[in-house]
Image (cartoon, rainbow, N blue to C red; front, side):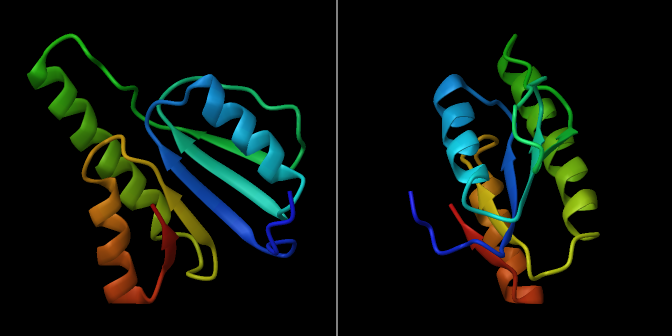
Length: 116
C-alpha cells in the first residue's frame, strides 16, 4: 500500500477498535512516520511506530451509559488533541458519533488536517 504519507505523523481517534481496524493500522504503520491511537479499549500492536493512548472505555449497558461514555471520550480526546501540533493528520472514526464534527471544528479554528 503506497499512501504517499511516508513523513506524516498520524493521530487516529476511535473509542472502540475492532479486528479490521487493527489490521488497517498495522498496514498503515509501514507507510507513515508515526501513528498514535486514542482509543477506549486495550489493544496491542507489533509495530514500534504505533503508540496507544488509553481513553475512557465505550460502555454499552444502556443508552445513558453510552452517552456518558461518549462525552467522557470526547472531552478526554479534546484535551489530548490540543497538545498535538496541527501538522499531524487526524483520522476520526464514527464512534462516538460526534467525532466527525469535532474534526470539522478543529479544521475551522486551527487549520487541522483531518479525515473521517
